[in-house]
Length: 500
Image (cartoon, rainbow, N blue to C red; front, side, top):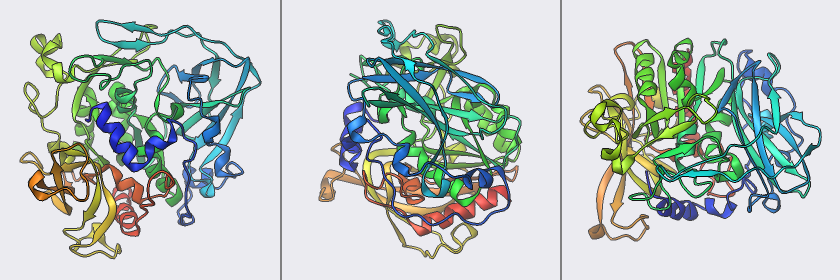
C-alpha cells in the first residue's frame, strides 16, 4: 500500500526499524497460561516442552547477519507432511548448521526445536540476476540441504529454519508445513505474497526504489526475505494471532495464500479460514476460492487490514516450480499485457476498472489509510461478539488502530454489523502526529465489522492491522505492549462461533 519511504517511516515510528532487519530483541511480556481445551493435536503439541528459553530460537541483535553474511530461501512457500523441501543457503562462513523450529505457544517459550543438521560446508552462491524488463531479482542457487518432513511427528505449522554460521551470524528461512489430509477446525493463512511484494532483497520490490517508475513488475520467491532476518513479515503481523490460537487450544492447521491460489478447495474441509495482519496481494483464483468457500458455509476471519487490495498473477519459476513469481504492474497497470487481451486479470486495484470488484463486498470493509497508530472505539457492544468483553459503546481499545485501517463502503454487505467505529484523521503528511491541526487533516472513521452470508458463514474483519497486537505481547519490546483483554475476548467469541 505505502511506498517504501512511508513504510520505513511508520515502522521507525513504531520502533520496528530499530531491529535492523533482524528478529533480535523481539520479546514477550507475561501472557496468561493456556486455556483449557478438549484434546486436539494443537493442545497435545503445545504440551511438549519447547525450547529452554524464548531466546533460544531468536536471533540476538549481535548475531543478525546485517551484511548478508549468511542468508537463504526455500524451494517452496510450504510443504505437505511427508514431503521434502530444498533449502538454498549462501554464506561467507566456512561452515554452518541449520536448526529447524516450529513456532507455537509451548508454555510461552514460543518454539520447539525439531531438527539440527550436522555441520555443513559454507558456500558463497552466485549473485542474483535482475531482469531489466521487470526489475525482477532472482537467484539460481544450488540446493544446500534437502529437508525431509516426516509423515508424522511434525505438526502443521509455521516453521523457521535458523541458519547459524561458524562466525555466529544467523538468519531465518520461513516456510509452512501443511497437512492437507487433516480437517482441522480452522485454517491459518500466511500471506507470503504480501511478504514478497515488500521484499526488496537485491534492490527491487513492488515499492522500491521508485514505485511510480522503477518498481518491480515481477518479484521472485527464489531469493531471501530482506525483512526480519529472513522471516518476512511473519514476526510483525502474523505471529501474535498464531500464538493466541495455540495458547487457547484452537484446533488449527496452516497454509499460505500461494497454496490456496493453487488449490482453493483446501479451505472447504475446515470450518473457518483465518487471515492475519497484512494480506494485500490476491490472485483471482484466491479471491474466487475464498468467496466460494464462504458461499459453502466456511467462516472467514480477517484479523487484518488492507486485505485483497491489489490483484496479482503468478508465474512458474526458472526451474518450472509453480507460482514462484508474482506479477503486479500496479500504478502502471495499463502496461500490463493482459490489460487489453484479458482485462479481468489486470494487476490493478480490485476496486478500480477494469476489475470493478470492491474488496468490501467480501471482507465487509476496505482499505482507507495507512501510517497511523491510534485507538479503536467500540460502537455496538450489545451482541454475542462482545459478550464477556467488558465493553460498552465508546469503550476505547488503546493502540489497536493502525498501521493501516479499513472503512465501510457502498459495496459492504447490507447486513453488516459495525462492532467498532474508530475516528482518526487522514493527514496531508505521511504520518498523523498527535498535534496535527484539524485544518490540515480530514476526519474519517475506521470500522470493525461482522456479517453473515446467505450460506450461514460468518465474516469478521477487524479493519486494523494492529488488532493482533492486542492478542499477545510478542514484540512488546519494539512497540508498546498493546495486549488488551477485550480484544482477546472478542476474538475468542468469534473463533468459538466459527468452530462450534
